[in-house]
Image (cartoon, rainbow, N blue to C red; front, side):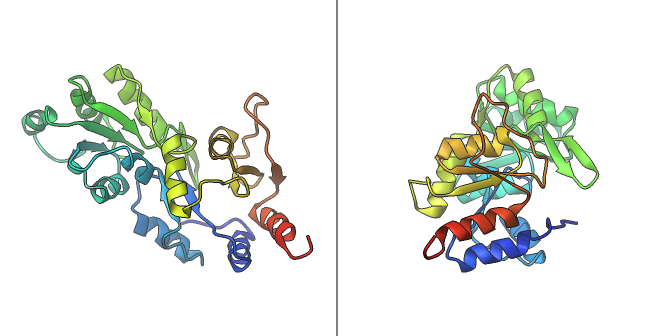
Length: 257
C-alpha cells in the first residue's frame, strides 16, 4: 500500500495552483501507466498525462515493426506496443523451449526491466537472441528497488545478469540517461529546463538526471537521501521534504519576490 510522505499531496496541489506543471518521472517500468496513475489518484493526486516511465523512455529507442522480447512487466509491453513495435513474447511466457527457440532468431531487441518472475529460465531466454545479434535495452540500471519491507534487488540487477551472460553493454533509457530526458521534454514541450526543479533522494539518479537535462536538483531528505559524492555535482537545494521545496518555489515565483 503506497503511503504519501507527510505534506507531499498538499505540496503538489499548491504547486499546480500556482501555475507549475508537475511531472512524475519514474524508473518503474513494470506497472502500466493506468496502474501508476491510479496509485497516485488513490493518494489524492490526479496524474493523468503527467507520469513519465522508464518503459516509455526505452520505447523511444524502437522503430515501428521492430520485434521485441520483453524481460519485464506489463508496463514495458504497453510502451512497446504504443510506439508500433511488436512484442514477440515475454521471457516468462508459458511456452515450450522449442517454440521459443523458433522465434528467437527473429528477435531484434531484448528489453529488460524489473519483474519478480525473473529466474534462470528467463535469463536463458533473454540471452539466447542476444548471442545471435539482438541488441539489449534496459529500462533502467537501478541496483535496488524500495519496498515497505526495505530494499530488494532492482531492474538493474536483472539487467546486469543478462548483459554479463550475453557479453554486451546495454543501452539504458531511464534516469539518469538521455532517452528519459527526451521523454520529459516531449511531455513539457520545452527545451530549456533551466528553471525546472528535479526533486529526488538519489544523487546518482535524480541528481545526475537534473544535470543531464539542465534542471535544478532538489535533494529530498525524506527518502533514501543519497547525497552527492562531491565528484559529479552538488544539489541546488537540500529540503526536508517536497513541502519544503514547494514553499521555496512558490516564494521565489510569487509577485514581488
